[in-house]
Length: 231
Image 1 (cartoon, rainbow, N blue to C red):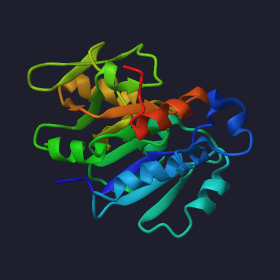
Image 2 (image 1 turned 180 degrees about the horizontal axis):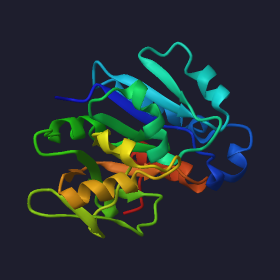
Image 3 (image 1 turned 90 degrees about the vertical axis):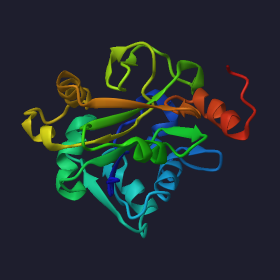
Image 4 (image 1 turned 135 degrees about the vertical axis):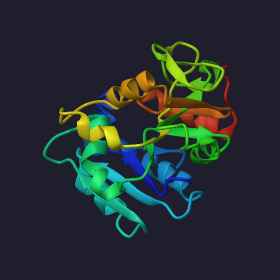
């Protein structure tokens, strides 16, 4: 069964964006004519019905105003404390529901297949508790490859340097309640699932660009236009 909820991470301060985030949250930075958060939301339209949960912290009111009126969308308020990805998803669990959920970073753009559809087509809840999208280093833009994943013949993943993680996945959230920290990375949940042998990967054959710093905006726009000279 395809998950019917998605967590979109939009709470970070975007400090690597320097002056660009002095008056706005990173998801409101425009790339190719529209804010990053809109690029992320566009990906969700292919999966219906899909309840969308966006977490808020830095300039949260600006994001709330921008997304006012969006159907099937609720906010997870982290204005009191920045919770990172794992803590943010843990707080949002009552909004996401008990079933497996999509999760998507909002600070990236994609060219090629819809990454959520790639995940949905590969998702097998009979053997998976998590499924992360993987990208070859040569298909990634704007991101230094320092850590990633490897896969075995069955698609189970372990830590390694074969593939990069571009910020899209499906996860069961059951184990989040067992993690006592308030603010923590989803890496903690991944380690639990890797130990159990239930975290899998699926390869994304398109291009992905991390829009985490100012210079990457031009790289992302070139990639989207097909004027991509970085191979």
